[in-house]
Picture 1 (cartoon, helix red, strand yellow):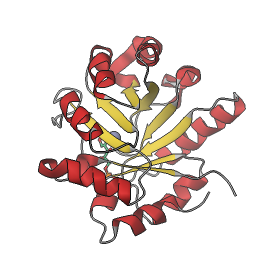
Picture 2 (cartoon, protein in one colour):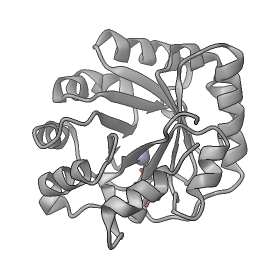
Picture 3 (cartoon, rainbow, N blue to C red):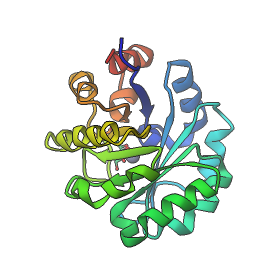
Amino acid sequence: MKNKVLIAPSILSADFAAVGAAVEKLEKCGADMIHCDIMDGSFVPRITFGSQMVAAVKRHTSLPLDVHLMVVNPAAKIADFAEAGAGYITVHAEACGENLAQTLKAIRAAGVKCGAVISPDTPLSAAAPALELCDMFLVMSVYPGLGGQKFIERTLAKAEEAKNEVVRRGLSCLIEIDGGVTEENAGRIAGAGVDVLVAGNTVFRAADMAATIAALRGRK
Ligand code: DX5
Ligand code: ZN
């Protein structure tokens, strides 16, 4: 039997007035991490929440918090989110530009696991040199900014390519995919070598959250 796929439900799809209860339920229902989508109104049009919310979420769960920073100048936000209790902080290659490696190192130096993120139109080559520095590598399967979008099929080849690179270079970096993950496509995504599936709408719209998380996980 191969490795278990990890499920990281995104609280972007939760009722923002009841996030504590939502996170407790996710943990009971078998989630492996809690994905926190940080949007600043500049890197993406919407604003979600910041480090105070992450700190509040942390008080409701022992699961690692997977903080996905969709912000401009992510390097400036590392200390806040590290202090808030992030388990992982992932930063967009598009937001970091030439400072990607430096930003990843700064996250590690803050005592947090780090990851690079590439948007659907960004080639793997924009971040591949940084794979050595990553604990996680996130391939966006929708354009960042909104939950509930449709999975962009062509991004799966990029995730598979990233996994191949990880294996080829003997790294331990996890490959994560984010956006449009459903019970229907989860098996195929895991089959491409993806280790961590983010799911917002699919988990929060489920009639039986535990069953849906189990179905997403499947076996790989
Ligand atoms: C989009 C976010 C995703 C989003 C996924 O910018 O990064 O994490 O919440 O939501 P679903 O699973 O609904 O596509
Ligand atoms: Zn996300």
